[in-house]
Length: 329
Figure (spheres, one colour):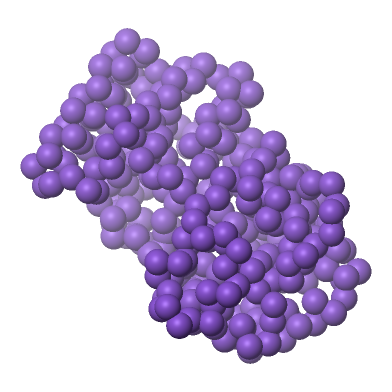
């Protein structure tokens, strides 16, 4: 199949651009990538008039590429860079159009504004499908991301010098939770936190890497940690919708302690392949328990790793996507 894949290259924290492209290529598809950030300009920092011009020019380039490449499928990640006219233009050329949206439920309104433009719309939250249906979006489907085994993998054991690792962006809720843990646990924080924390914050001493890290560096971090703490950025507001960390941490064969999301028990068996918490008390209790049992952590990490390779890689997801298209087309 000829696939025109549009990726949001201006989003530096979306490595799945590469994972999707490489997986599609390995599956034997003829893939042409349109990188919306190829110019190196970040649309969000442009003035309003310049930003409108930027988007107009980029969508015009996309249409010209569609004219020459003539894809069977136009597939975009997130999709918020493309106007409805560009998507309709490509569809009129005979291509099926699909979007993989990853920011539900916290950006559901933004998603609903564009979802009807596509023939197929895939979301990271099964519990928002009702909202799509009520808004007239008939072809919305649940499709979380997965692990990319070439990156998310076990590495040779060099010991685990870090007890509880949090790797990701700063957020006020995440800061509050880590502050609550800091008095009782040895933390390691990886990510761009320095500019966000108060100068007197006790969390500063736990920052190991203040800044962005590559996916490959993340795999090293995870393999060096006893517990990977997953805190969805919407914790406390919605108990559904999955972030990529669910699969990335398990794909590295490491023990993951994640906030509960309704979809997780359908994908991983709690307390056997992943451990979940609903509140801070449960988080502290389970962190303390599993720090005290190396064998218990290693068993759950191993089970989660095996399940990930069996069911939750990008190849599994893309095959599922194409199966959905065939069955509902």
